[in-house]
Every structure is written in structure tokens, then in C-alpha cells.
Amino acid sequence: MSVPQTVLDAEQVVSSFLSGLSAAPPPPPPPPVEPPEFLLEIGYAKLFSIGTTIVFQSGMQIDADGSPQAYHPTSSKGLDALGNAGRPGNWWGIATSNGKASGKPVIQGVGDPAPGFYVSTTALEIAGFTETQQQRYVNASIVPFIVLPSGFGCGTKLGDLVFCYNVETGDNNFGMFADIGPRGQIGEASIAMASSLRVPHSPRTGGTAGGIVTIIWPGSGKGYQENAAVLDQGGQLLSDWGGLAKVKELVSEEIL
Image (cartoon, rainbow, N blue to C red; front, side, top):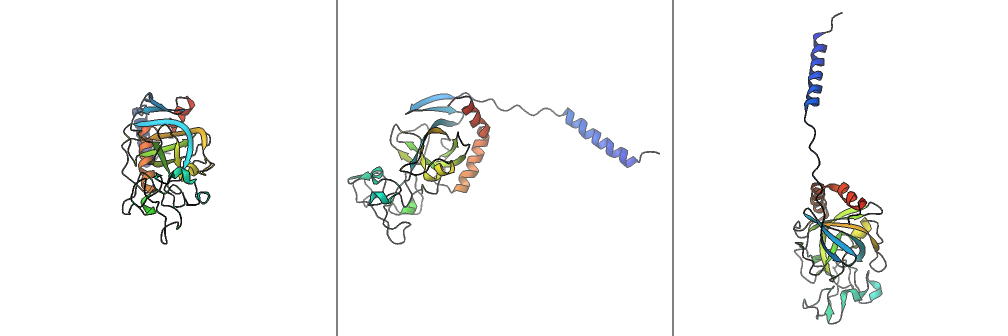
């Protein structure tokens, strides 16, 4: 019995397709891993330049700044101790009536997120609100962000995109550079960032001594962005850089 021509034609199409596959060039090799370039050391953390990023491994301290419940006139009622916002005549973590460190602290009133608490500030601000409105500042309780030391430089600016990775658990998240801390101290992040990494997130008792990898893309910021935009832009930046596999490679080879 002869084989129908339609079957022969189908076999020829399949054969041609498979021949084309075998003749296709192999996929290009992955881009070479750029060797880390040591930048500086802050505390126990060594910072490296890798491609377009700054990468370091450190512990994590917890920042409450920007949260409506961060600081209260009765220190024990706030998420954090009032002393971490300053003292009379020298306030650095709460809004004041004259916008200066020497001014009178502003207390949230009726209609504000947390009446009776001080207005807690962050270096990165949200447009559309006055300096004495809590909504002007990035809420550490719900927004993942990191803190960099004063005078950090290295091409960074407020709003730059970051990625944090917990070496022990594998938990990770994107965020922004949204606040400025004291010189000589690195590895501070918001309550929300710590929580997303499964790091104890109490500003008073939380944090971890090590095992947190942070990647910063200097110059990537667009001011304050909502979380969806941060995730979208951050995901693309990390993918172009080498992805989570590259982070794990740096950790496994004990480069950081």
C-alpha cells in the first residue's frame, strides 16, 4: 500500500525543520562576570563596584523614620526611642515649626495618620505635601528602603533603586535609597524592608549582625516611586546585571 502524499509532505516539513535546528548556531555565551573592584570599607562592610552597581554585605539595623508612629513625646510609645530623632534644640529626625534643628517639634493632629505622634521625616520626600505633613515622608512601616551614611557619594542620589538579599533565608526585595544616616555606619533599612527579608524588624530590638547583601544602582532613581514601579524597574536592572544567580555566585565564592 502506498503512503499518502500528505503524509510524505508532512514528513518532509518535519525533516526540514529538524535540519534547520541542527544547523542553527549555538546560543551566545553569557556575558563575562566583571571582576569586583574594591571601593572602600565602612565599619565591617567592604564595598565593591561591580559593573554599574555598588555591592556590599553587612548586617541590618532597623529604621523607623517616616512611619507615622515612629516617635512620640512619651518615648516608650513610639516605634523607636525618641533619642534617635534628636533632642530639644537639635532635632534631626522629626519636623519642626521653623524647619530647623533648633525648632519646636511638630505633633500630628486630627486628620493626620497618627495624632499625638511627632511628624517623622526622611531625606527622600513625596511631592504635594508641606514639610509639616507626615504624608510628605516615606513611611518605613510600609515602604522598603535603605539608609546610606551622610557623605556616601559614589554617584548615588536619593531615590536610587536597590536590591537586598538575605543570605541565610534567600528572601529578597527591591527598594529605594530613601534616608541618610550617620557617617561610618552602613546597613540600615526600613521596617518594611527588614520584614520582607524575614529579619527581626523592631527598630528597638530587631536587626541582624550580618548576612545581608545590598546592591545599589547609582543614578537610577526617579525620586519617590510607588512600589509597583520600583519592582518593575528593579527587576529589569537586576536581570540586566546578571540576576539572582550572580548574587548567589558572589556569595558562594565569598567575594563579598
